[in-house]
Image 1 (spheres, rainbow, N blue to C red):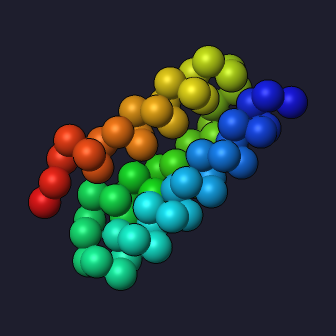
Image 2: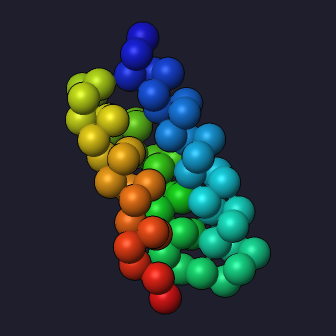
Length: 65
């Protein structure tokens, strides 16, 4: 149940990143948004979901193009 809820949270944040990246023509938030929306389908562990989601959320902050 926790994995599913985290997946919904990260999917929602990913949608925001995706829309921002598309409107600003910024490739890093766009790709991270797609990654945040897709990765919960492939990760089964709750801790791995939180870890991967946290990393994908932090990438646009550190990589700016």
